[in-house]
Length: 203
Image (tube, rainbow, N blue to C red; front, top):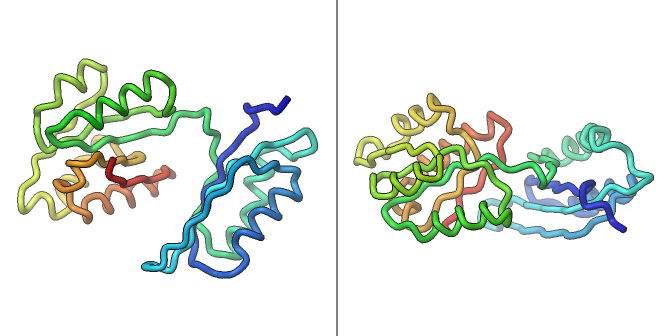
């Protein structure tokens, strides 16, 4: 029987070039890592390559700490930004919303049903409409009014940094039109400095 407790997710990104997939899959195979799923994407607009591999350690495999340490050589060869994480450990998430609650309600439902293992650090909104819904769940609500000046980046990003809200960011649909790309990018860079995986995606 496979031991799903020994399952890990490797995510990596680098400039697109030949041999990336072969290097990653060969590395895992040489360490008896069974690849359960493999996805890849080539962003032609930025010439960047993205890869996600779900793999399982087997009896003959080295420890996950050794695998992480040894993968550094592969990462350096391709100048990768990468991470190997345990999917059973909840991801720290910051949710950005506007007035509508359907995306937030769905995320909360999936969290409660353990469909999405996540630790919601805070919900950020440019309106106060969803504050009662958020605080009822025992989650911190951060009100960031968006104005022509504040949406430029520095003020709201600095406030979130002071409140230690730098985490994985998932931007729900309507909020994606309210919080600027520059602000989302600033939050993403801040999260990277704290070793967090970042997602800025409309739902």
